[in-house]
Structures are given as C-alpha cells and as structure tokens.
Length: 126
Image (cartoon, rainbow, N blue to C red):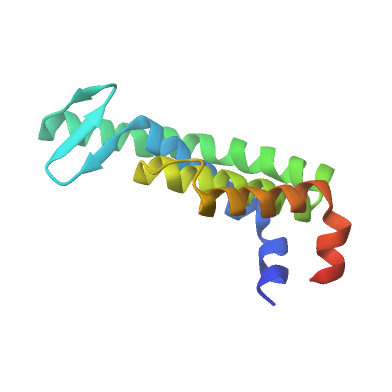
C-alpha cells in the first residue's frame, strides 16, 4: 500500500527532497549559530538569508517539480525510487555530518542500486 502512494506522488516527494538538499546548501543553523557562505552570521543577517532563501527556493520549486515529472515519465517510478533512496541517504549523512560509507549507508545504496538496475525484479517482489 505505501508503495502505491509513493509511486503516485513520487514527483512531489523528489521535489521536496531536492528542496531540502538545496536549502541545506544555502545555510546551516544549529544551537547557537547560523552559518552561511562559510561565515558565521548575526541575527539580522540570518533573518535576511533565511527569507531570501525561502523566496529563492520557492521560485525554483515549479522548475524542479517539472524536471522530476519528466524524469519519472522517462525512467519509471521504481528506478527513480532507487535514486531517491541513494540521494536520501546522502542527504541524511550530509545533514548529520555522518560518514557516507558506513555499513548502514552502503546497504541503502545497494538497495537503491537494485531498484535502479533491476526494476523488474523489485516490481515482481513488491
């Protein structure tokens, strides 16, 4: 049941993931600091950066969603779901500053690669 929902909404899910990764590259906010462009920012600079980032990311959203729609139509949802697994693991590792090559990450990369390289096998099992 969840795979049907994911397949039907994959473009939206991938757009959200892309927006999350894009937002993470623009700035980093943690307890007690706000980092953007490699520099620590004060509260006023941080507010401006946050608001500009929201507007910029919002303006790019339709283009990114259109991109993902064309990709899903071209390659199929199973393959794209595999790419989503791989990119999702990369995003989590990047956001948390974890290693990209630990056993758990490698297992997710392997499952994602299976979805990409053998979609018919995955579809027959699911």
